[in-house]
Length: 91
Image (cartoon, rainbow, N blue to C red):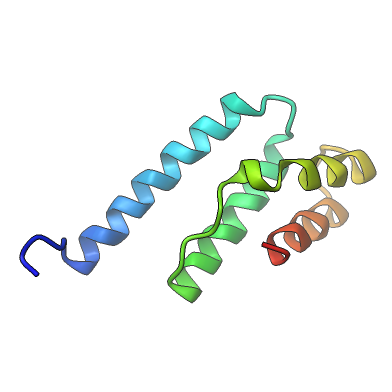
C-alpha cells in the first residue's frame, strides 16, 4: 500500500493528465472549435469526478463532435453545447 499514492495525489495526477490531454487535443485537432473542446472537457471532468472513473480521450468522439459543429457551427451556442453533451453521454 505504501507504493500507492494517497487519494489526493491521485486526483492531482489526473488533473495534470487532463491538462496535458487538453493541450494535445488543441494541437492534434486544430479544426475543432475551442468551444466544442471546452464543453467536451468540462463534461468529461464533471462526470469523472461524479462517477470516479476515467473517460476515453477526445479522439474517440472527434467525428461526432465534428458533426455537431457542422450542424450548429463552431461558435458558442446552446445547440452546440447540447450536441457535444449528447456525444459525451454516448461514451
